[in-house]
Image 1: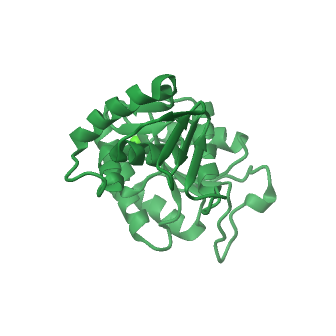
Image 2 (image 1 turned 45 degrees about the horizontal axis):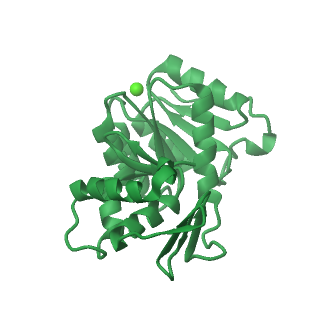
Image 3 (image 1 turned 120 degrees about the vertical axis):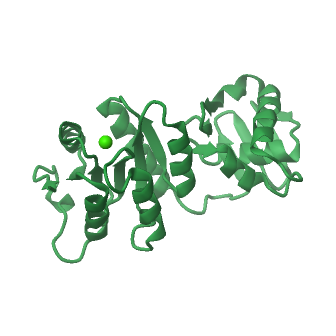
Length: 250
Ligand code: CA
């Protein structure tokens, strides 16, 4: 059973018949539990999104293919094709690989979260969560997606009191220079350059490979300890996401 909202605040956001056109506010929710799906659908509609729901992975894949939404809210616990498989198929299909994915996971779902992020999901929320938090996360993901691909200076990242200059390999915290190793610099460059994005250890390893011979996921944790110590008070910007990885606070 698919049910389609007809209460979008803006008629322009209604899904079109015929050729789908992506709308920046269009969302598809894939969730098998009817009360949860209904609650999320109406809640996100009230937040101004154009929302459609799917009750299974199969239905979700078909709906995404037909409607080309901006984002999919994807419950991982689904009968039949589970959420991770839906994520894998969406990312493998050129027609849907660009659609943002926000996963809904169980409290103890760290392994699934890591897998989903490595498959290309943008973010996740652990159940239970509030509608306000979900709406804020969706907006943050869509905002990150809209950020200009080429910043004014691709060799420079400024995040609050932390400024990184890639050309000079220079890090300033509150105006004072901080001496980082090459690996520490690369980790900070990755995290601070993508505020709000959770990086798994495996992704960090991929990003810093080359700066240090044979760095392991375990070694990433050790480098983070050193990096945080050098950043002093600014270290609070780097959040540990337990069981998953690290994120630079928005
Ligand atoms: Ca479910």
